Image 1: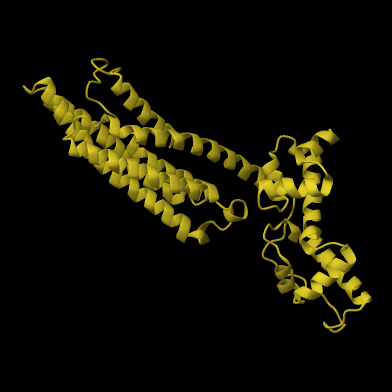
Image 2: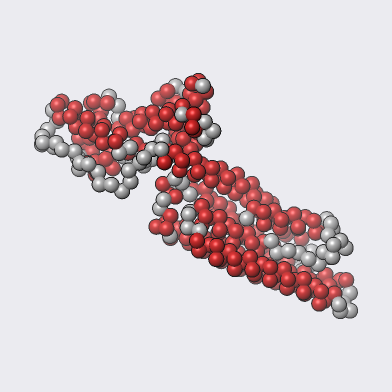
Length: 343
């Protein structure tokens, strides 16, 4: 997608600078790179969500149509160049033709874009696994930015048709700027999150997390209303063993209510037991385990080149900033400083 947008912007700049005029028989050839941007994004999205099987067939169709458009444009130029039309008439006819071609490209592009968004919003059951690694917030933000790009594209086309295919060039400047921004955002974010995704998968393989298993419930023969010191201590031992054995602290959204539901014990009883024996709140108690897990990752030579974000997210924190704040609170230093201090 980045390549197709880049080539389209470069082509527009080259045509504006007359770099193609009377060279290599390119007087009237404008390759419709914009036609490929949305299909390539759809292919990237389905690949990232790990549901790429169907996208390959769709992408083949669009690549085929792209080549058909290129051949049709060459045939159109060749046909009109054989006539007795003047240079000015050829310019007008060609701009009209490419404008209609661009409208076709816009309709196809926004259709694929809308379908991609539909998959992201309505087909979450198809990619539940990726949601354990990424909340996809960055992709939603990309969709919002792309809506602005499509609005600017509509504006440019409207001006182009209103001026009868002459004097339209400046209306495309906002569109070129916005697509350039997309190149940087998608390039940076895409590569960054692909790397984080790969690292998190490798980290998780070594954690041996048990998924979709029925939790082992606590066996407590004392009445649930009993709040003796012995009851709290025995309960806490089992609670602590359950959380560590099942690695519940690695779940970013794990709460006291989640633990209460799994163990069928009141949240107030759990809170009291943890406060009395761990001498800290449930949040600090869970975060301490996450920090310990992060320390293990940071000190393991196998993960020497891994990003701090990957380590923090796979240790149970829901964001890089939260990881930094909690880690510094518990250790007095940042994760990077801790890692460097042990080398």
